[in-house]
Amino acid sequence: MSSDLLVDLQDDLGGDDSPSAALDQLKLVQDKQWLPDDPVSLSKSASDIKSLGDTSHLSWDDPFYDIARHQIVEVAGDDNFGRKVIVFNACRMPPHHQLDHHKLLMYLKQTLDKYVESDYTLIYFHHGLTSENKPSLSWLRDAYREFDRKYKKNIKALYIVHPTMFIRTILILFKPIISFKFGQKINYINYLSELEEVVKCDQLVIPSRVREYDDKIRLSLKPSVVPGPISPPHSPPLPFQQFGVPLSELRHRAADTEGIPLVMRDTVGYLQENGLQTEGIFRRSANVSLVKDIKQKYNSGEEVSFSQLDNVHLAAVILKMFLRELPEPLLTYQLYNDIVNFHNVDTESQAERIQNMLMSLPEENYASLRFLIQFLAQVSAESEVNKMTNANLAVVFGPNLLWGQDASMTLSAIGPINNFTRILLDLHQEVFTQ
Image (cartoon, rainbow, N blue to C red; front, top):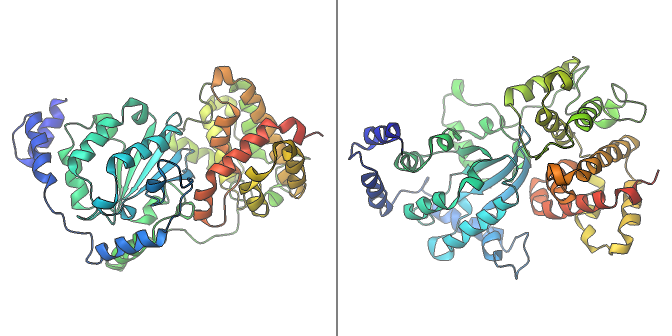
């Protein structure tokens, strides 16, 4: 344990400088009854849980069904830098006697197991944690220790939204057992508008209680310091803009004769030449400032050369970002229900059914999808080296190919969307016969 951290802990607590004394502090605080975040927290907590009903992406006989139905842990696609987003909603935790906290920890680990080989972001909505549903500090301490290097090495950031004195105190007390490297990944987010720098809030199912609390604290500020709205108003695309522009419009700008957008041609072309054997391709994030710079260059009409940049993961992130920022997903909202329910289609009929579904796509969507899938098939062909099988690619690309117009629809359908994407990759030669 670093002596610097111990000195910090001693300054914060004014106590003994030994590790055991710091842990004793945890035991002392464990029994303290912390006040709720607001006077109506407790009544709202019960109503929130009741309103959720039996909503779950798991079947009723799944061992984690009783945990999943509370929607405490959610997976919400990618953030603005190509990293998977895992969300933890404190306000959806039921009272102590209604929740098996050990089982919650196991469910969280099971969820993370699907994504820890990729870079990922964890967003923790703290509002709604009360003395009624707050886990013990010994549980928090054990939970941190339970998550070994496998879980910590690829987490790029932990965002704590609406932090209170309680959570700040916890982190001070935990300094002796939190590594310095992990501590640097912790970020406080005071308002939801600040979260837009990380992830598009409309792709998250943010609990109504959290949004109401955010509105309340924003209104309590002086007008001169009130943060802006969560989502800025939409403005007409710039003359050379490539990101966030409909494919139909891009077709008349810098797409090729088949309608393949410039960003897709640039990134795929570079990755075909340089990235097919890169282990973990599409699982790593890239430098945040570089990503912003490349996006700005494309939107300004400047030429981008990935060969000069010589960064496979940067090109991979830009490709995913381009797809994710389309105003309508590549697979279109029209096909959403058919894709989410595709698991009901007989195996023998799957290729023909997909062909018929894709015939309804606009020409530029079909051309871009075929271009992308054929490239991903090349990536998968090198899976012994790059570790990206069709199943792994589907987990990465599924949420970037299709999402619902309602964020809650997307979260409950991520599994079926990924499953369809895997089948599309498996059957690509039969589906794209021309």
